[in-house]
Length: 269
Picture 1 (spheres, helix red, strand yellow):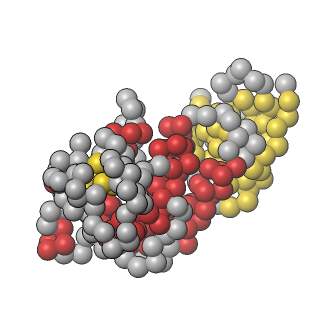
Picture 2 (cartoon, one colour; picture 1 turned 90 degrees about the horizontal axis):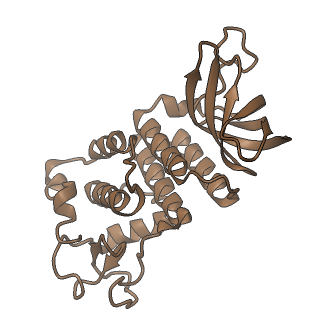
């Protein structure tokens, strides 16, 4: 049994008995691990109130390969990110990106995923308003989707493989997992060049600086992509709340017209 000492992000926390907690940690050096924090729920616990979702610290735990649950012996707080609990938009986004990593369920170390997840949490916590938080959350989600091996094609037609020019409108081919030129995908809603540029940037970890050209379209793209390529038989529990928050960012009925999830993806399956 080895003593592990590594940076860790708390992705999930739930009670175990009357006095302890079980945490799902994504660690820098050991991937996703479950640990028991004995006595964490006691009033005078040495952990205080730091073992909450989205916090980051240096976790020390006894690691025995082949076991599903390890014993936490220490957690030195680095970032609490309490701001994520004060904004429903930020909380919804943080919950979704955390669930994406939980869904992958890998014990292999992946520093790039770790740093991308931590950066997404930080960006949402620092957001000045709900719209900025949701853009940061979308960027975090698409970045993680790509790092987990599901990157959507955004710079070439997924059918004929022709490179797309920046100003070219496209449609989304859900089954193929990316954008298609209008010649290869003649039916379905057009994705304007501005929205494709936003998606292209977010897939590569760059948050759009300005409000999204069509929040409803991005809402539909994320939902249908997760349902088709990522969730398998385990729906994302955090997704409905996040989509509700995204729907609240559509500023007017005229913009929202035609932005419904089903219509936006008509003919894309």
